[in-house]
Image 1 (tube, rainbow, N blue to C red):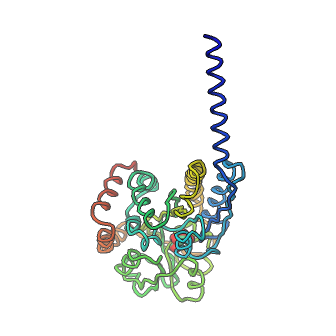
Image 2 (tube, helix red, strand yellow):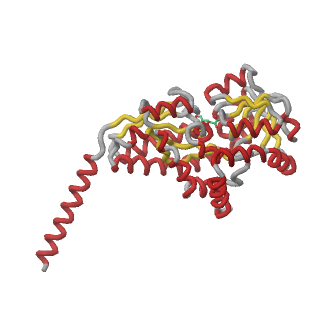
Image 3 (cartoon, rainbow, N blue to C red):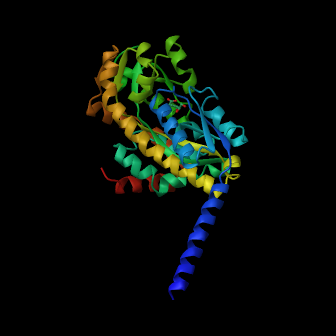
Length: 336
Ligand code: KDG
């Protein structure tokens, strides 16, 4: 009996060693180009570094991620096209810039959709967040994880926005996305869609008067150098999404896909923690850089929510009522 047990143990040990060896063989030496739009020392850049390190560590250095900051591989939509064509392997960008590729992504542009990061995490990482990601596959992209861009706030050079009427006449840059254009037209602004890569110059040359982004981006992109007023609205929570070229992804072994997916989840958790820690300090730092900050009153926020209702209908018309209702149901289940 004892000899049998020893033999069985030996076979099992040998089997697992062979399996490990095969798994290691399943990982080839590869270079992965990962592009993003913000600069290297932004929250987006720091998270890209974490992702690269986690993938290298888990593949014994075989999977090398080369990160490209500041839209050096192109704007979000240019990189998305490169991934779909197989000319680039991975990227992170805004879900809002994917609406032209997968209309389901527009659900995340709904004004005032999430009230907290906790709600956002629960919904984005849950079944409906995955369902929206899955819509990318038919278009040649693989959605891996959502990172946090954050709650968006207004900056401009004309006046502090304290009530809805203050939007009138402001040329406001928005992400190239129908819901954002609609939302700010409803508010009375002159919405000007521009890629993020052109935003700083547009502000500097006064081609536009203002823009809206999370504190982290206002800080890391130094918008305080070309903007006077910051008005706190938290009018929408913006996710980023890490995507891969489906043409490239389907050529990876299961082991390689598992390594990248596990690393992406680690980078997601680390990015959210880093972004939130930075956001807690960012407002004070932005004020220190000379921007005048005003918090829009709850009454005026409610007026903006009411005014934005036609834009919410644009979302429902774009993504379909069933998906919109599924997101609302998930939000209702989310922890506060
Ligand atoms: O690559 C830059 C994008 O992540 C961009 O979407 C950031 O929120 C953004 C914006 O305003 O364009």
